[in-house]
Amino acid sequence: MAPPHGNRLLSRKDIEQFFERGVHTHLPGLCVICAVFGFHDPNLSLLLAKWKGVNLWSLPGGYVLRRESLDAAARRVLYVHTGIRTDHLKQFRTFGGPNRTGAKLRSFYAKLGIRVPADAWPFRRIVTVGYYAFVDSGKIRARTDYMLDVCGWYPVNGRPRLSFNHEQATRLALEALRGRLDAPAAGVSLLPKRFTMPELQHLHEAVLGTRLDRRNFQKRMLEGGRLERLAERRQGGAHRAPYLYRFRSDRPQDDF
Amino acid sequence: MAPPHGNRLLSRKDIEQFFERGVHTHLPGLCVICAVFGFHDPNLSLLLAKWKGVNLWSLPGGYVLRRESLDAAARRVLYVHTGIRTDHLKQFRTFGGPNRTGAKLRSFYAKLGIRVPADAWPFRRIVTVGYYAFVDSGKIRARTDYMLDVCGWYPVNGRPRLSFNHEQATRLALEALRGRLDAPAAGVSLLPKRFTMPELQHLHEAVLGTRLDRRNFQKRMLEGGRLERLAERRQGGAHRAPYLYRFRSDRPQDDF
Image 1 (spheres, helix red, strand yellow):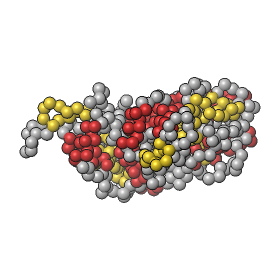
Image 2 (cartoon, rainbow over the protein chains, first blue to last red; image 1 turned 45 degrees about the vertical axis):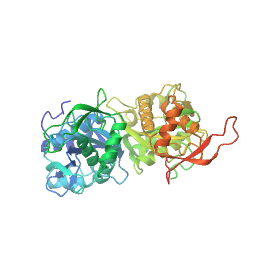
Image 3 (spheres, rainbow over the protein chains, first blue to last red; image 1 turned 135 degrees about the vertical axis):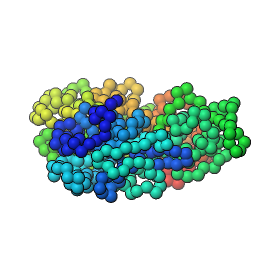
Image 4 (cartoon, chains in turn orange, blue; image 1 turned 90 degrees about the vertical axis):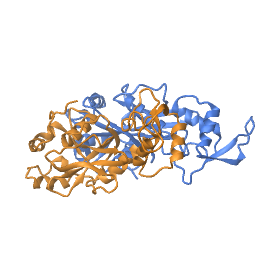
């Protein structure tokens, strides 16, 4: 689905137009945020944005057009801020109590010299639909729209502290990601087509944030029947050539 | 948490006030619905409401106050329509595309003789935060507020067809419920404190909507380590006294 801005990211003009006409074009009081996790063996990272000219870090997020679905909004919002396209975004939770507002944004726009109505709905209570995705961070490079100084991958542990309620959102998204590790082909889009047991284990360890026992992991993976051991082995390493595996299911999907 | 109406259900006056002042008291464009599943060995049922004077069946639902969280809104909305209180409501999905509107409600209120503004936001596009719960339908009896003719338990298969997008919502909620069956103490609040293996199996079968093989089920339950077999047996049946079990975890929670 092509984003409404074509192939370009959000500009200053887009933001000014949003505050002039957004009440007609967007659903008030609602936003989407995207917790995009990246795997690059053996590391788990998170896509983060630093807002222009202020010490404010967050997940990419934005508002929902009246004419688009929530899923489409999540895809579009991720694209217009970061240049990243993915069909793997899934909901993890909708949140936002009475104290969750966008009041902090007002001074940000003031610093950029963008005129905003003092009572615009983005500064009042806002409900957030949280999406997450899990992608190959070695293959995906983020860009930045007009609002951002920086957008890129940061280690999940040891990243900048996030504003708004995005610390809580990140915890909930990570929980959802972990819950999907039991899916029959979890990891299929992030591993080589034929992979070794250590490669699969690294992916699980990255998501869980903990080391796993090699033997127990192998036993559990093989018991479940999700893997097929191939006749050929991985060649070229310093050690004995390890077995290669692939997921057994006919149409393997990550289900992350 | 006491609902704002105290201990009474929604009245005609509450509805009239909502359409007079709701724009100030409620978050526009947002609603919550509650898919409450009930278990009464061996049956799975769903809490449904028939709207007054029309052939319109739905899950209980309503709007979110500006001063309450989404979770609190779900609890309150369930109470004011049905008289049911539960702390077990969990989100399963937020949905509502551009074509999802409350337009159907206009003629309903007209029939009741309630004056509503033609362009009130409940009749335009609305985003729905879906909640589900799993309770003991043998212990919980529903009442009806002013808007409803009937509210009660209906078999999940063989129930009335639901309006709005509640058929889709019910499918998604049931999926979420099924996904929770693997939790370590799934069913603890719906079973006797000490239960037999067939009782546990009935609960799983009700949620899954399918019969399970007795031996495989028992094997799987015992392998996982979630159950502890007790020394005493259930007495008084026609057959050989069956073993009694309980969940092993320290603070067993359904996690439904």
